[in-house]
Length: 280
Image (cartoon, rainbow, N blue to C red; front, side, top):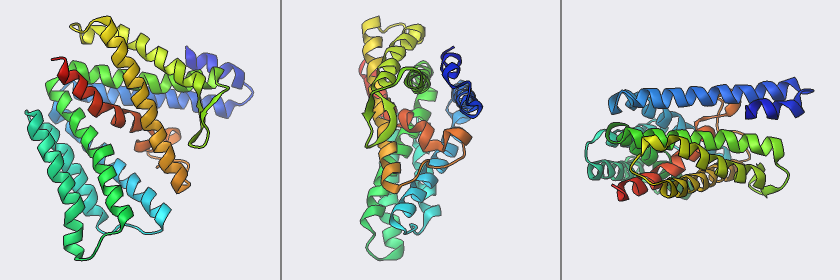
């Protein structure tokens, strides 16, 4: 409905309208794939998580190469280690999953140095640490949740994706006041506020997934997810501005790359899982 309303002012620009509906279609496809694969358990979701890890690491390394005009050596090794860390989510124990992520981080930071036997560039070290924190760890947590707390997994995915789509829709329809133009020239206060309010509404509809949580708790968590999603999006935008690129990739057509579309989910996942565990 919101996509239809947003399309009205742009009816004289058919390309803009087509782009809006393409984004909506991709959003629904992503939700279907994540929720559908997760419904069969962690082993069914593992290929999806590994594919996202592969694309996410590839896009991050490409971004660093564009910024510093220096492609990182052993890219295949880095991507492989980043993907291996995601498999920590297959463990039944949360502690073991965290341990495997930690081992993957140690390997990513140390093995290339031991192979080259030379000092590593600072931007490489920071980029590798960011990749573990922003890509590998969240995907490992999502994979773990798919097997141990599927209801919470669905709640998180649906609220984050709804926030992303609705905040953009409210921004296109009513956005006038730029939020942080130096980082993201398209984000508005109206879109951010609309996304936050919409997240609470979606969370209320999805409360049946977490029936033991009172509505106030659900509302607070939804607002937190909204803020974390917005922050993750701004972090990704900041990286793109610094590297002077429009999108991380084109794997998702008009939506961009994996980091363009999943930045909010990646940033919100670890904190949501900590909150979820604290209420168990």
